[in-house]
Image 1 (cartoon, rainbow, N blue to C red):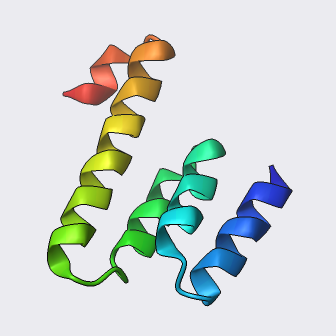
Image 2: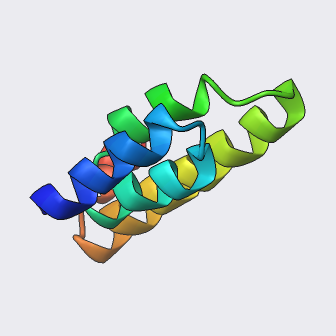
Length: 71
């Protein structure tokens, strides 16, 4: 897990935001992925990545049978 988080930090530091977000999603650090997506420009791409993060979070809740978290 630490390797993916470190990789995400490194990717983010060199403005490789999509790879950073993918790294954070692998270890289910959704808040960190959202923070990273906030740095993405243009705004449209930021919205696409945020939607991807939200979908991954939703899928995790469904897989873990935490349906009440979706409300």
